[in-house]
Image (cartoon, rainbow, N blue to C red; front, side):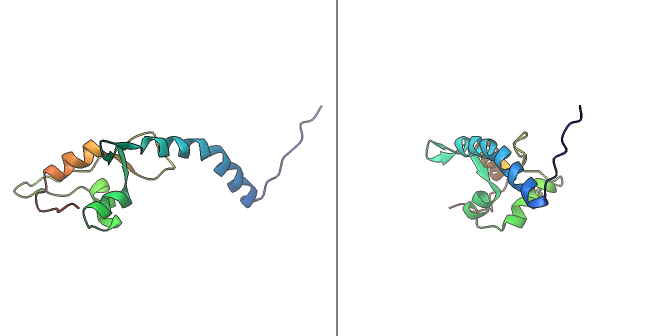
Length: 108
C-alpha cells in the first residue's frame, strides 16, 4: 500500500506554519503581562522606545554589546532563550541590569 504524497504551495506551507506557531506566540504574549507596572518580557521595540534609541541600536547591544563609560570591554544585552520565532525578547531585569552600566542613557 502506497502513502499519498501531499504537495503544498509556498503560501499553503506558510499558512500551516503560522497556524502551528500561533500557540507559541500566544504564550509569548502571556509572558508580556504587566508585572508591577512593567512588562516582565520586553521586545526590541519596547526597549528602543523606552530609551529613545533606534531598534537597530538595541539589536547592536544584543549582537555586539556596548562599552560602558570608563570600561574597555563591551557588555551585551542578553535575550531570553527558547522563544525563537518571536524575535528578540529581553527580561525586564536584564534590561535594568544593562541600563545600570550606562548612566548616560535616559529612559522615559
